[in-house]
Image (cartoon, rainbow over all chains, first blue to last red):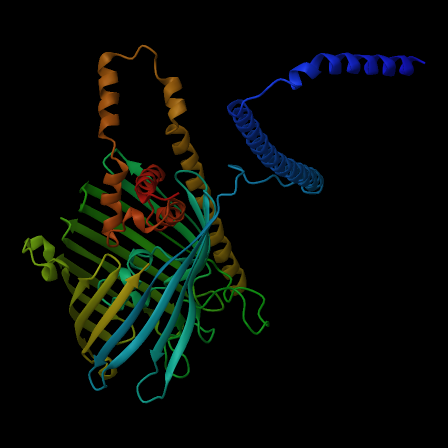
Length: 453
Length: 123
């Protein structure tokens, strides 16, 4: 009934409106008015179309936003799930693992870096043909686990001609060192593993491409270059001028005997002392311990005194002592005095005096020993303003070694280093050798291209 | 008897090494405590005289910068390496190795690292 009343009302209103509007619709309209009205209607139509387009775009954007929000919600859910899992795992680990984590920062700050050097040698020894004699790649892998923990391992991959009168060449892959460094505090660092030994400074700081002459000084042959064990080392600054006192104390397995006895020579007449041999276990599995059981201890104390940059003096005294035969009865001891002097950025002088005491069962105590001194001068110090000269350094070395068993070798070496850059070096030298052993009494020249990275 | 003597020698060497290591570590703890700047601040009387302040200022002024320490320490073993040759993260690793290898004091090593990282131009 109510709807019927409403419909009747609408019909009546329509009749009234029709009656009222009819006379207006019937009024005359000019062409101009009609065109203006038409134009206005067209414009309105265009506007409506534009608005519809904008609306469509807005809707699309809205849909994309919704999708993005949904994706982020899902990600958040996953992250929360991972965090919950990690927390649960940590709680579980804490329950089963009473060992506390290492002190210090919790964030992962690890980094892997490779440094090292590579060399190519060309040489000629008296009585032999000249040729490319050596290709060497010596990377050092550094893994910084934290700000105070570093693993470092140095390798030496070398291709070298075999001995005279034998065929072919040999590729060797050696591990020079592999050690863990842990900074205990500002003054003590713990080092463990197969370590470069601080007997003098040559092995730690001058070997490889850092040496200005392609080969090692002769007396370094009477010392071990590395040892398996542990070490504490550090430095104490003295004043504010850069002056420093340094120390290293180590315990390693030490040298061993080739045939196990304390004799000076093996049955085939070669020296019995094996400087780098004792690393603990035998590869045959029969021996379950150190070859002689007794640790070999040693250390170095150094003093570094800089007057200013490039003007400094460093002095050091170091040594090592321990038994070397399998019974642990014969003692091997070494003492080293080292020094390095820099006067200006151009002149450097350094050297080492090395003396060892080797107790033997059959020959008493023998004394392998020697010393070397090396000077270098960069011709840039002449201020000649010639690029070729400015990149050149001349080097002179004298080294001598006595094996304590009758063989003595003296050697003078003159050479140069040409710096193509700070890391690419071209070295050359001529060695005048004098020995009472005719097999070693051969002069030679060597050229080497070395790259440090 | 010979074996006993050998054992004694081994034991003696081991004990000696352990004692030296212990003494070094104890000494380092004393040094670390003595060099702690917080401790120094606490023990310093509040009313320091003008002269004392000047001396402290002079000492602070004399302290070598990272660049100076770099020039003093690095070039004595190897040709100069430029800061841009490694990233800041790599320098951190390299300097950690150098601190151990060349026995650099901690503060000097940190100052050199800061200098190299700032000039490396990379994170």
